[in-house]
Length: 324
Image (cartoon, rainbow, N blue to C red; front, side):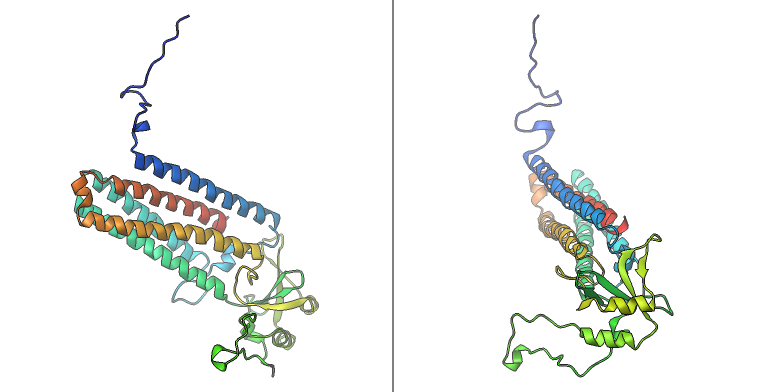
């Protein structure tokens, strides 16, 4: 039986040579980077999923955490995160238009759509920085028990969260932290909370309308609200006052939630920031006519692939971290 071996030709699917699959070297390397980066993000999201499933009963409820909107006071669950997502998706649309204009050799339109893409990316990065600052600062404050559990406070009359400032008392304690200008500097001393544990406890005891809410989620999908007697008993387990969130403590609930929030959104934010910087460089190259001289706008297309990838990753982060 004869065997015929057919070599690759220009008309074949795989021609080999310098341009496999008909793609340039730059495009192939960009696709290799995107695939490897996609695997990295997949690993982070899978780790987040396993951790959340393991601590499902104490995991913070996103609608109760991300409730802030700049310049507005009130409870707006997920509104601003949805706005950030919309801005990033629209920047992906303008990037598509920029690539299409590049294929048609329309320099002025490439400049316009690249500029809009940069503005969208800058708004997203700025919004994420604001969200981080708000998350770190916190709203209400809470107590942490010896076992690392978070105790939050609720006003029984309104059914809404109560801040430490709403009921805590000011006691004659030494609450002044030494500063650098005093001539004494304690490197091991962290920033103190607005109220001490004793001030919170005494204020709670004198406020009968304040109840404690644990981080455990009940059958109705809400945090467990204790009675007044149960709250007083639970108060004896508290050892720390917690304000905001960091890598050690988290007033919203499980500290793993804060760890994943900072790591995953921070890693993605770094990608968006890098994309904005690259887009700015490409933008000025378009203005000075670099790609007109080359006779093609392939560089715009390559950076467009990266930008679409960053947008797609955020869709998954938004879905699994904020919505589910």
